[in-house]
Length: 329
Image (cartoon, rainbow, N blue to C red; front, side):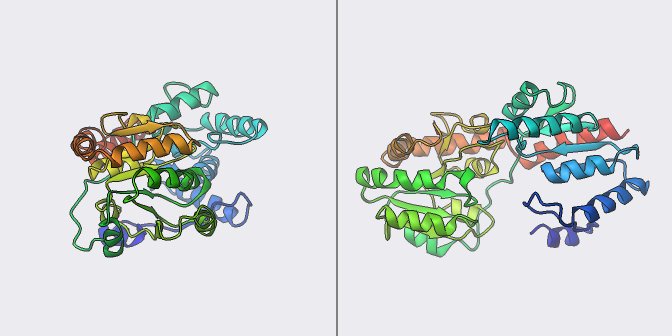
């Protein structure tokens, strides 16, 4: 949770009632409070994240003169959905874009998709890639995960356990990986609404005792340090921070080439890109890296260098601050 860190830094904050549900619920109270903050005269700019908060804040700030910056972190029209819902989402986003000072796209791909659906003009859509901290050594490594991975070359998904992330595809790839590399150690690290269904799928695939599930223990470096290969089998993305964390920790990546993932993962250099919803292709990519320690070592070095050069937090913060200055002056 970010709140203790905010308190320690002396940053004032207020928690508003947001959630994943699309039901109105308490959002009216959030809208009224954001509007009061915008009208207070104490703020030069509002920066809001995600689609529901983005919609509320932009409506709340109407007529106040306070510019609003919006970062969707994956537009609601991205991902598998009906054509009707996709067009409706794009229409809502396009209407709201007209009252938005700037829309921050976290990848070039996200900006291209917005432009294709006429969600904001080129000048309004700015690209600021996500960043992540350097991979610091951990005083308290994940001993349980370390013990499991010590038995052979290890690969794991480290992600939220929801359909978007394609962990089921990794599990379907696992029998092929284990057939080719019997000593491999495979794991799923994370929590989320699909945990029980994924454990049931693993059992149905005969993976009990061969693929282990672990909870997420932040910071991510604590668990990434135990992996030989990081796997992200997402079906859709904007620009996943998890691959940046893998880059920082020097863990070669096998990731699906969706959204802006290929802007971080250099195919054949820092890792391997493959198609989404393709267990055979994912299995082949993971197997190839588990069987090639020297290749993994070269990718580890390239990954750390790429993170340092392109995806540090300082670079992201500086770009965001520059945007604020251009809008609030």
